[in-house]
Picture 1: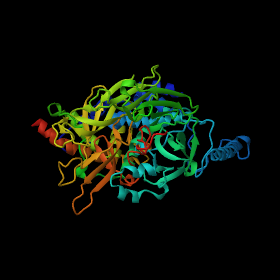
Picture 2 (picture 1 turned 90 degrees about the horizontal axis):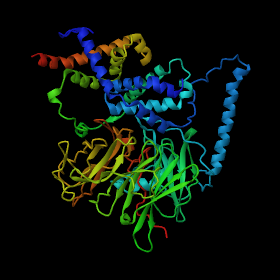
Picture 3 (picture 1 turned 180 degrees about the horizontal axis):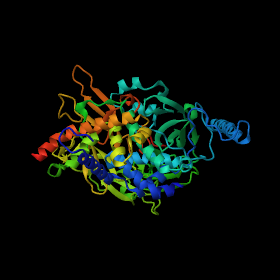
Length: 164
Length: 475
């Protein structure tokens, strides 16, 4: 498969996957571009694989997780210096439950978020997710469980308030 | 999904699925992405070196198929050694090099670290010329970079100098493409241009480019993303007066073929600031400072270098320096051209604090990092360096410089920011500078870059300012 054939058939799906993982357009662009440039330069090898699109998706996943691993070694700025960048417009009036869920999702550790994306967006089984992440299925279930518990805890007050 | 808080498990799973699907709206445009990939990576990158033991070939040991890989590897090693020897003859670090006929290949893209190019270029002249807190900083500059004719390749992840190259003259400007660095070197009143690459084994090589020497003062240089072209801004003296025309040269790094643009006469008092290429390698973004700050010509200009005109200001005045109740010292364009980042230089009323100017409801502060969207013109404050306690309102006691590096979309940037405590009768002034990575709304300090990064270093896609702005015009 040539890179052009891959791009025509599979790139939109890969870009959607990057967007769901990243959670915002700008990060998705950086993530996808980082991976696609690397894939393009190695296409003589990747193109020979049976399912090059799966390989590229795994590259996207690894890049996403790699950012997390690398950034964890950095020294976080003093909390006083953490200014909210590009202040978001006030969505208070239209702040739906779904947006609140996405906001909480974005706060999850990346590995937990990746597990949820692979499980609920890609509909992959725990064994398959474990292979992709290089861990055991038990670890996958543990990540999923913790992530869901976090979301549940964060979302419950909103739901109660909404219901009330 | 078990739920012990009252919600139905299937309902929550469906909610999660639906919420994740909505994130698809953030998917980048495939056509734009494909164009960016082609433009950035249109290069024959060598296959990655196998990790661990050599992969076994399918043939039996001793058979021809089994021998092909080792033989090919041996031949490759011999070829690499031969090429290295040839390169070393062309220019060996530590002594003046000869002229290369051409640059043979496009350099493979730099690896990345945390989404940032893993290497950048610095020189001693750049590091200690205008760094805040000079005395403290000079003490931290690695000894390997103490000479003005030496450039150092520095690892972004550690701040360590991984390789140095000594060039045959004064390094006056630097730039970086996706995979190589470039330096303008002045010797005997003429600038020549070198391409610097990081070779295997942590060794750097410098190759003289076939670009004709430039005898005018060099302003800044900018490398096209694929390294095939170098934009060179110069000041050309006009007669015996101090007035100089600004001129732009775009030269092919492989052949030296040039194209030139001149300033129109009425704008001859203007000045080109920093420059950068957009990802397509055709449009050059540059800051133009006309005689007056308020002049409409003082702006970030986009010049299509494939268009016919030789008028430097025949392109599009993208964004004026005077904007949103403040004056910007210039803008850095994101490589995809969809965003510009500017640093607030002055506020309405003459650089005084407490200006009424605001963006997005936040008070404009000198040194604030403001990002503009090309399509909508929407401006948002990306970062404000906190002021030192007790000095609020003191003019410019904190702020940032132009981004050292911007990601393709502008969402991630590397910033050099500082906080300054002015001198008192009993104490010297102190400036604390630091480098930080801005990723969306997340700010991360990179303290290991404090001593080796300032606005003169060259990162991929952005233009380092010239090392010595006061370098005299050549006679």
